[in-house]
Image 1 (cartoon, rainbow, N blue to C red):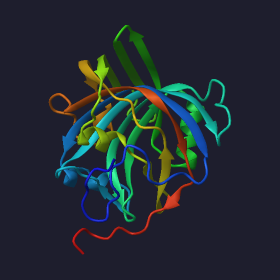
Image 2: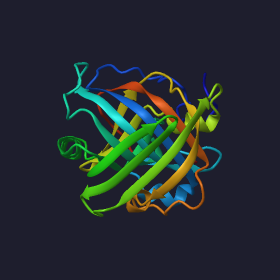
Image 3: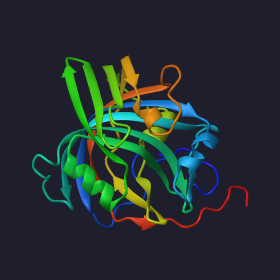
Length: 257
């Protein structure tokens, strides 16, 4: 299935149209909570790395707050690293397009509980990981995600999300696919912007009700604090994920030239 897009941007597809030639990292993302708010593309454009621009759907882009459990992070296709490869994580992310038309995400922050994983990702990929106290607790159909940052600044920035998981989404909407079917991330390494591709099965998505939200991480990521409830609340039990070799992004050609 392909969803219509404009220009030279790759279509939104529930499975990647760019199979990985080589696997550098493997992992499992489990018990994900996706919260999203619309935001003006012009507001977030300065926050994206050079060579990328905000990705939009019907003229709007989005900021996402995502809590989950990272399970079995490992090198290549080998087994996950014991202890250090499994941890709770909360992300604040934006949506991007590069000069090759590849859609991706740009992370404003990635809070995680394993200091070694945080330091490794910051040094090797320049991703804005933060060391935090976190928990993911499930009681029947309710899941609570808690986070409090330890390092770096702003220390003490916190987030609590509590959802009630509903029913499987039989027919994901164009917005569901736009926000979750992302086959790479963009990050700046030195003076270069790179695209790090990933692949995984089609997301199994569930409806969810947001029961509680008290968040400081979005604002700590340089974005306006969300006003009002999120326009999209989704849960997923998770997917296995692999990441491939990074590729340098070309200069971005302005739209309309």
